[in-house]
Image 1 (cartoon, helix red, strand yellow):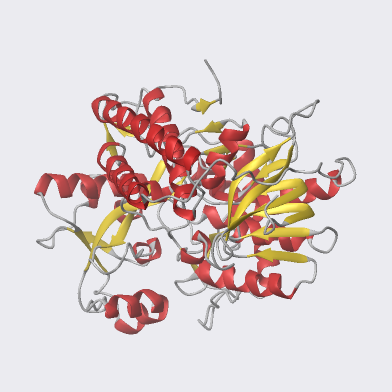
Image 2 (tube, rainbow, N blue to C red; image 1 turned 30 degrees about the vertical axis):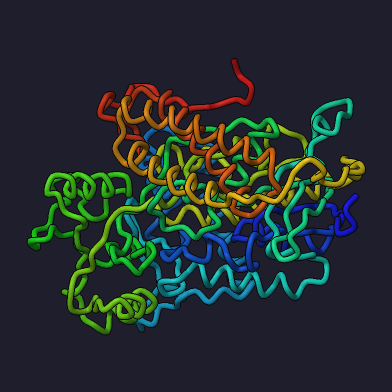
Length: 537
């Protein structure tokens, strides 16, 4: 055993430190010993970059039924109605808990305001029901939860620690039903692998949108939880439904800075380079159509005209209104020489959200005992073929509560984890060819953007499948011969998730929601989930 090997044992191991992971950690920490693994600093997650807000029915003019209906319509016939109702009905509880934690949601300053908090509206919503903290809601939630987590004495926080693989009883050769009992993780600061044992393991690792060349997500969104769950034996579902956010700032230095959907919700118009609006030609809802429709419309116009971007214009609104509602976006755009109070912003679509994921029930259970998945990594049936705007942060908190209740109920029914062997590095060496990882990383993401993007064809998917199989073989060989590094772990996960996305897309012989293929442009009368099973013949 390596002298630097560390072993940790807890009641609950949570992999991921976004809204889902930290909400669950805070719900459990008073009763159980909980460890949280964060790939980078605790606050670095996709949650932190969510701008728009969190949806909930708070206005008397709104209704739970309207929120349910909007979600079902956006999901294009593929939502699980039970999951939708469960989420919508628990939204107020989630909001009140976040307020109790200290999240500084924007207040309504109008003298005749019916509610204490300002509600905005986003695409696909029939009412104003988006609670927000200016235009950086995710950041407000993430930093508030981080502060609470750092103060809690029962939370063991492991930052700069990337999970490599889950440990199950089957992998350990133990008899009986398969159960997850922990994980191996690379401590990035100390550069050695540590062992984490736990009675309950929770994946809260977010999505896989870094598999695409252009994405609104941070660098950590590499599909780790989906890949680890698949290798452990869990089914995945609906991975063909990758949501491309329609309006990502087009600027060489911006690194995919998101222009919130709330800009369109407050009157922003999409324009061609000549200043002509175009969304009404694609959908009567115009700029407030669901994201899949808006993203395809932009993609279509860019290809038709051969232009690099379109423009999002809210400069017809008063400058004070824009600065008050979108202070973060306004300041960030100024850094790039763009004044959104005076000019339209250049925008393009970018990969934003993984609507499918690891199959779970409404308690977060996966196919393996003791293993839960919550947040973007999971497929609960809430989003169907297209996620409704601002339902994602809501899902994180609601299902963190659901999983937390189940874990507390089951706490005395699962035994402590068995002894997990130390990570074996006896047959590997340090790599002298890191360029291989960098090259494969770049090729994979470009290939996915070109062949498995907003508009797909059979020919493109076949090309992608052949290339990803070759890349997967190269990466597997590399992984088997060299010591693990952060980049290698992420690349191994990305290539697997890319393959799962391609296989899912090839199975769907129709266009529905976020999946559009020129070979099958019609929508079939009956909606079916695309479910992939490990080791299926």
